[in-house]
Image (cartoon, rainbow, N blue to C red; front, top):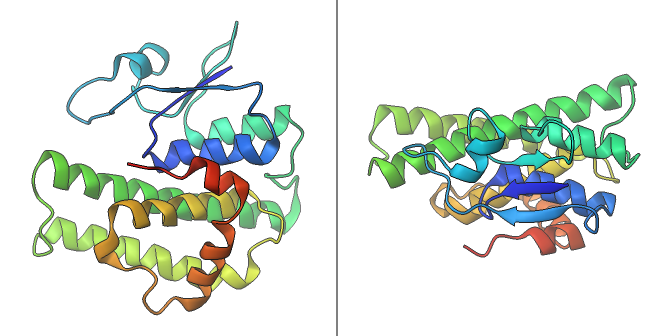
Length: 203
């Protein structure tokens, strides 16, 4: 199998975290497809996924899988992991946390595209103000949930770590740690995991 990714993508990092946590690295090749732009198709991604987005998991003899929630759940099933709790409240908590973090990442990536490709990163722009408020609200929700984070990471914690790591990478000005001591302490501790160290973007 081959994972098509870009180093800076928080969604791709989530998949790479799953691969590392599951010990699947020897069986899945990582292929960096280069820049992905909302203004032009990426040939490698578009050849495998109709929307041309990454990440994409290319499977020999089978249809490619996308997007990150599908890829991560597939990997967990194949490697018989425990990133997705089987049932009960633990499952819904993990999935809800993943949805929260994915929403934050979608918002952050949209803000990044707005700043880079349209030159509109102004804090006075109503759209930018609204999206930034959504990010702040998401971080607040993560902070309220941090006391219940699972000691053995699920897809929820991996998604939150990917989201916060992306904010560190691209949105230093948002200063998400301000007033969020417990969440920041959790993230700093989690960031020491080998999976986090090996997937940290260098861009």
